[in-house]
Structure formats: C-alpha cells, structure tokens
Length: 239
View 1 (cartoon, rainbow, N blue to C red):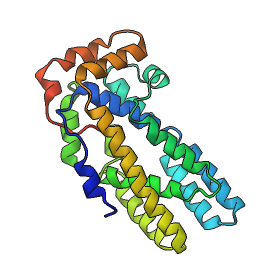
View 2 (tube, rainbow, N blue to C red; view 1 turned 180 degrees about the horizontal axis):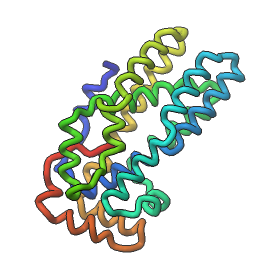
View 3 (cartoon, rainbow, N blue to C red; view 1 turned 45 degrees about the horizontal axis):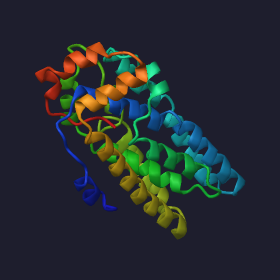
View 4 (tube, one colour; view 1 turned 180 degrees about the vertical axis):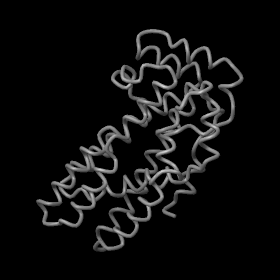
C-alpha cells in the first residue's frame, strides 16, 4: 500500500470547525487550479522525448481535471464567503510545499514523477466515504450546498476509476518509470501529511485570524458559526 497506512497514522485529528473547512477549500482550490496547465506542460515534454503514450495519458488527465478549482470557489460562495478574494490573497502555509512539488515535477526534463503525485492525491481522495461528506455538510449553514469539491474528490466522484486507470497505465511502463512513480507517490504523501498537520493543529481562532487578515475585513458569517455547537460537530475536513 506504498506506506499510506503509516503516513495516515501521523495525521493530527483535532476537532474540526467550519473555519477549518474554509481553509481546506482554499487549499483545494490552489492544489487544483494549475493542474491542467502543469499536466499539459509535462505532456508536451513527453512528446519531445518521443513518448506519445505518456503524453496522451497526461492530456486525458488534464482534460478531466479542468474546472475543479471552480467547484471549490462555488463551495466557498455557498458558505457566504468571498471565495475569489480569499484565494487571490491567501495560500495556506501547509499547502504551499505540495503546490511547489507539483510545479517542480511537471517542469523537470523527465517529468514522470507527476504521475506519482497525481496518483497520491487521487488515491487519498478515493478513500473519502459518504459518511465523511455528511459530517462536513453538518458543519455548513442550513440549505448550503458546499460540498461539491468534496463529492467530486471522494468515492462518489471519478477518483476510484482514476486510481484503477493509473495503476493499469503505470503497470505498462518500463521498470525505471514504475519505480520513479512509486517513489514520488510516497514522497508526495509525506509532503501532504506534513502540510495537513501544519494546518490541522492550528486553533480555530488562528484560522479565522489568517482568513480575516488575508481578506482585510472580518468574516461575520464564519465567526458567528464558529462559536456555535454546530461548528463543533465531528467531521472530516476536505482537502
């Protein structure tokens, strides 16, 4: 299982809050907004290297990932916060290394590692169950449809089939490529775990302060919910 179980054990599991979910959605935006562009950059490089089969795989993935950043923005708007302004001014510190890793991988002369990174994120997303989505929905204001991104990146979305397709494709690659993909999957998982812990261990007050500093004004809807029992319901934050 590429060590995912041991990595998962390292994750902090504090009581979740609505403010934490907002931060998670902002992180989700940043990990998805550049995915199509990065994958197409890597695909172009594999065309130059005479590897059309890898280029074709990456082009398909780029098309499939297009627009996922907009799901996160819709969720933020559904929560009553100015999503566009927040993502323009705020990148959670724990997400920055993950975004940089993907940028760097896709810019390499031989960017095969980007498949391992993508597999890592999709495999972890595929583990999210309906119960996880229901717990997050319980954090949200009544009537708010704010789990679009999470539903898409869970067992309800296309992640399960993507994982299966990636395993089949990687199995067809030369041994050196397979090794590189597996190694990068593990590295990316470590980076993800460290980044998630950095964010999850913050208090709700710290998260709200960061959001309000980025926005330059208070977040009354989030601040009001943060002190209510509703926002303290047990749930899994989306990522």
